[in-house]
Length: 111
Image (cartoon, rainbow, N blue to C red):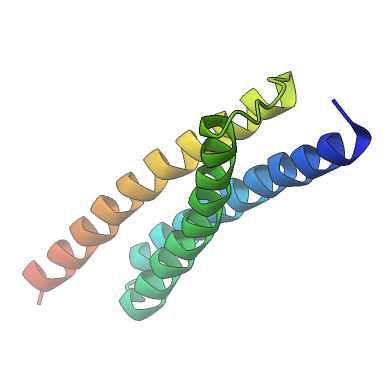
């Protein structure tokens, strides 16, 4: 793998890790905001999480397109780690949305 390709792949992989981590953090902040009854903030944090996941998804799509076009990426432990980050962030975001909805429902029933 040429050094340029390696650097580009490393940049993409690190972007996936960063976006996945940021998405998960924002989702966790959404849960904490909902727990305190701050539902507007919770919704904003869920949207923020979604935005990070869109960035990650776009990077993944770019990698998949290159793979489909015959530009095979070297699979490294770091790449696998980045995919784990994204999968965990997506799962956590989905669950955070459900938890925020539950807190909203409980708050409404408590009125």
